[in-house]
Every structure is written in C-alpha cells, then in structure tokens.
Length: 272
Ligand SMILES: [Fe+2]
Ligand SMILES: [Fe+2]
Image (cartoon, rainbow, N blue to C red; front, side, top):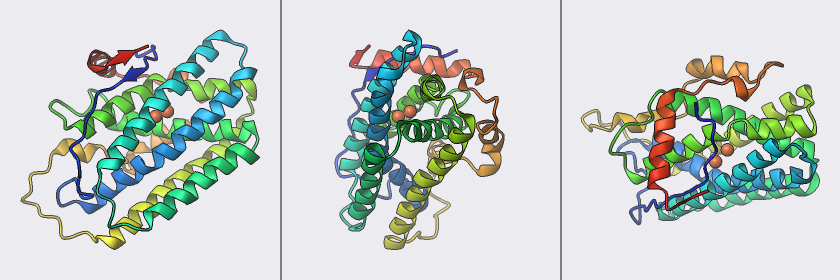
C-alpha cells in the first residue's frame, strides 16, 4: 500500500491568464485554493532547507534515502505551484506581495536563526497535518476522471504527499526524538501556516467579495472536494497525530491511491 517514493517530473500546462475566481461563482473556494498554492513556493523550499541541514546527522540508509526523495519530490511540487500561480491573474490584489514577503522572511529567519530541532519539528507538524487532510480528501480513489490540469496537479501532489508521509517523522525521530517538543512546535507550525492562508484568503475576499452563489451553475463536485475538510470530519485523523504513540508508519492508505500513483508515473516526463 503505497510504499515507494517516486520522484516524477510532470508535464502539466495551465491555460494562461486564469481568473482568480476560477471555481465559477465561488470566490471563497477559489481564494482558499490560491492561498494554499501561494504558500507552497515559500514553505516547501523551507522544508527542503531543513531536511538538507539534517542530512549529515542521518546515519540510517533507509531514512537517508527517504530524505533524498522527499527533497526531490518537494522541489517538483513548489515549481509546479509557482507555474500555476504565475498563470492566475492576481494583479488586482496588490497586498499579496507583502503577504508573501512576510512569509518568505519568516521561513528564511527560521532557517537562519532557529535550531535544526525546531525546523524539523515544524516540517513534521506540516507534513502530519497535510497528510491527514489529503487522505481525507482523496480516499478511496482520488478526484475522479477527466480532471482539468490544475486538479491533476493537486492530485499528483497529494499522491506524493502520501508517498513521503513517513520521512519528516523518521528524520526528526532519528536525529532528536523528543515527543513533547515536536508536539508543541508542531501545533505552533500548524497555526503559523494555516493562519497565513486564512489571512490571505480573507484579504482576497475583501477585494472581491463573494457574490451570491448561483445555484444554477453546475459546478463540478470534484472541485468541492479539494477543500480543507471540515474540522469535524478531520478530527479523528487530526487528534491521532498528537498522541505519543502516533507514527505515520501505521497510517493505512487505500489501494486506489496506488493506482493513481501508477497513473502519474505513466504520465511523468521523467521518474527516479
Ligand atoms: Fe509537497
Ligand atoms: Fe510534503
């Protein structure tokens, strides 16, 4: 059940000049998605820097191999999100630049001034939360057939998040292994990035307020699933990541996700 980490270079192309409200009539959903996509080209390079800094302390060859593949997968992810972000028309949102600068400054400050232990605990805080959210949104079989390119991008990214689900946990445990510290920093990390996304989406909504949702628009239900799941539904998965005996090694992934992994391997320009 999804035990291999495959680095895939994907061929996705996006239509140029996408309107910021790209989920028709649904500003909120569109802006939540954009906030997440704007986060990643800052967050994922920070995760990569943290993992690379840990590399010299990792003596277990299995953990070291996971670390290497994690770094190479995340590098593909943020480049693809950047490509998507560049096609979205964001000119009408002048404050986004300062939101992004604040985030980028934070992550560079963490790399330059915080301990490796902090940076690895942050990484695992992010990975644990997103892995559980992704599982909730994707299982059992992903988002369905005939997806537009940006949804395929999300599906490919999510599959790889599930593939590398154990890596940041293993690196932290291998190098430090301090549960309480991981718990506190992890919870803070989860607040830090989700609060940034919330503020960005709220700002975008202020600039382009939600119109009354036109119920006659037959929006694809698949789009609805790429939303942060409601807290109620996520709760059991979320609570589990805070327990002292939590390990992502025990998380079961449904077999349909392996089929998606194979699909994206076949679609990839290059794999390693
Ligand atoms: Fe990623
Ligand atoms: Fe990840």
